[in-house]
Amino acid sequence: MIDSEHVKQLARDAGFDLCGITTPEIIPDARAAYERWLANSYHGELDYMARDTGRRTDPSKLMPGIRSIIMLAMNYYQPDSETIPDGHGRVSKYARGRDYHKVIEKKTKRLIASIREAVGADDPPECRWFVDFGPMLERAYAQKAGLGYVGKNSMLINRKYGSWLFLSEIVTSLELAPDSSSAIDHGKCGKCRACIVQCPTEAIVADGVVDARKCISYLTIEQPSEVPAELEAKIGSMIFGCDICQVSCPHNNRRSHVSRHPEFAPEAGVGEFVDARKVLAMESREEFLELTSGTPLTRAKLAGLQRNASIVLKNGGEGG
Ligand code: B12
Ligand code: SF4
Ligand code: SF4
Image 1 (tube, rainbow, N blue to C red):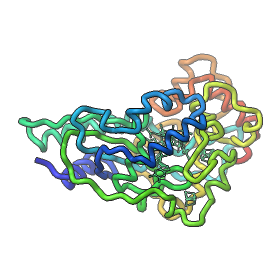
Image 2 (cartoon, protein in one colour):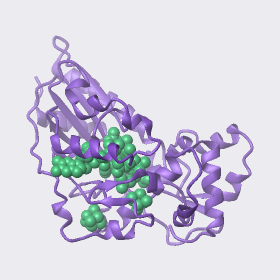
Image 3 (spheres, rainbow, N blue to C red):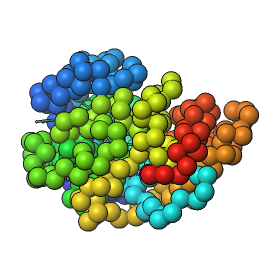
Image 4 (cartoon, rainbow, N blue to C red):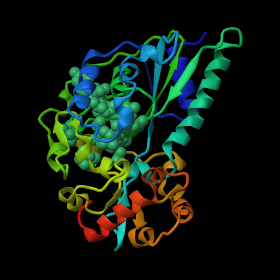
């Protein structure tokens, strides 16, 4: 047998910074928020967000016999330098080191193995894991598992680490005592609206609601087509991703701890800055992979990163 405290200890041993446990019930408010988001087309060209809608809102469909969800988080915070070198673009904090999907996959598999070992060979629990791309409303279930609350910038904010967290989860047949959660009413933001006011593209269209089509993160990472002309200047020097609605958050200013995980350090990946001219001079996929292999930047593909590099050079290193 294994209990929740034991699972949490094993999660810490596997290298996770936070672990909370919840049950696989539908969260009606989160489901409604997601359905409204889709109905408004805020997902833009993220077609995968409009597929599997039944499963994404109902974890009981993720695995037969599911009883508990183990929500996990890793702190990736990296500080920013004050100045940006000439002709360079800034990479958002989450993407400076190794690809978190791979890092978390390794740690999660280790955790599942140690949970099974603790339970014993007679009755091995069913376990499936997901990170980011899985059909899960990760922030809603992280908040239900007591890892934090969802702020007006839509980020899951934790008392100790702020919002600089990667989320992932194990769904399991184990019966585990759940943690308690509080309702998301953005109440812990109080009267603050800093993220909404400072977002350069007005992408936070209501409390906790981001229109991806306007979000610099989406425009520089996910969108394969051209960036709308009126948004180009607002991208400033951000060559991949955007951290403005997190940097502006007072919870983060009080709580950022540099990540203890060497995989997320800038030295482990592309670093804080990328030379935009060097990116534009790349002529092959091989050259692109030489810079980006094993890091989140592969997602933009060479054409996407070159589009971002020319925007950054056009913007002359302003903003960001
Ligand atoms: C699609 C997506 C994006 C899109 C859309 C973002 C968005 N806000 O929806 C884009 C490309 C823009 C994006 C950008 C970023 N992303 Co992203 N993204 C996702 C993804 C795959 C799905 C998010 C989603 O379901 N959106 C739909 C909306 C409706 O859901 P939501 O914003 O999560 O809101 C939920 C809750 O707020 C709740 N809710 C809302 N209102 C209410 C009210 C009540 C009463 C209740 C009870 C609940 C409730 O319900 C909603 C639906 O579940 C998740 C991974 C996952 N599987 O969940 C990662 C994820 C959210 N992204 C992540 C990160 C790190 C980022 C960036 C910081 C990357 C960067 N630096 O550039 C930015 C941040 C931008 C921002 N402010 O959101 C992390 C966030 C970790 C955290 N601490 O919150 C996640 C969880 C990935 C991960 N596994 O770590 N992302
Ligand atoms: S990531 Fe940037 S563009 Fe997107 S909502 Fe936050 S501040 Fe706005
Ligand atoms: S900046 Fe202010 S409003 Fe936005 S998430 Fe942080 S506390 Fe909430």
